Image (cartoon, rainbow, N blue to C red; front, side, top):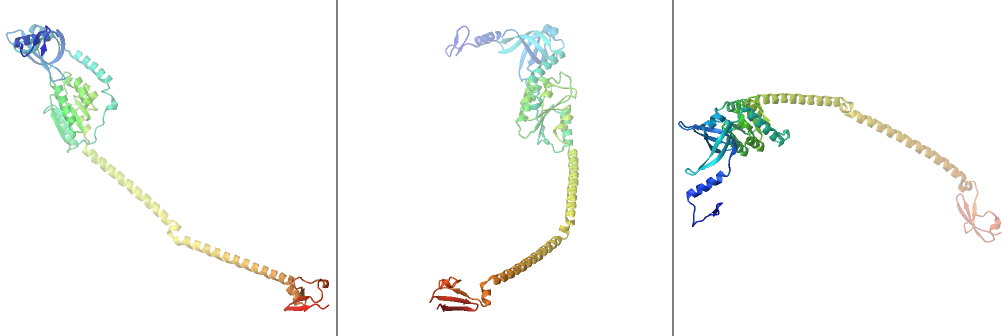
Length: 407
């Protein structure tokens, strides 16, 4: 159910006729009033015999366009040299043509944007993007050493495409490209480039994307300074190389891209290594490795020779023989020392035995003496120590006697 401002309702029983719907749409659209619009001219139609001029105005960053009608005098006053691709600012109000059911803008003032104003806008946009961090060096990604596949966004059959492909394949013949041709200037350039970037960024086999275009005027390179394109490049997960224009041309996309190449030829040099240079580097590295290996072998050989020249290695038995002589000398010394000690101990023992024999009672007995002992073993030294009939034991040198005391 739809309700208008007046409170009338459209129902299945009371539907609005087409004229009422057209009238109400016109009323709603008319509420927008007069507005200023910025866009790019894609078509100008001046019909003979009429003062009405029809202009198709397109958004530079999107695939959207509106029709603008104006008086020839308004156009001649504000933009007499207006051509396709120019940027203009229009003061207009929307109008709905009920007879055709179409919408257009009625302009009463048209201003063509000059180069100075465009450059001022670009400078302002540059400051905005830089403040947001789109130019930050720390977010720049390094290019792969040897990409599996290179995505190339460029104009169809352009010199930029030829330069990139030819120079890249000259440097690395087996390099693989996925080329997407787009418009690189004009009102449709930005949407096509953004779509191509999205397609290549989704391709898992593409390791790097090259955005290439040949030289041109400032107006021709304006699409590569578009805000939407700069943000699309910033959002890419795949590293992007910007190779737009000549070395002196610096569109805003150069600041956003991960790598800026001065020309398409320079881009080819940056995305792939030179096969000849790499082969020479490998050859030099091999030579250095060979020299280092030979030097290492020579040093180790010298070390082995020095080790082999040492007496312990040249005549290994010398050490054994020397130790054998030392052991033999020690054994002789030990034997002599032991014999000396044994001899000295024997002599001391003989002396001790001699003293012992001298001091022993047996020696006294040998001279004819005897030892008299009582029955309890006590030695009798005084006759008073025994009495009559005591049994005594008499020890002689060659035996014993038993005696009974009589008196």
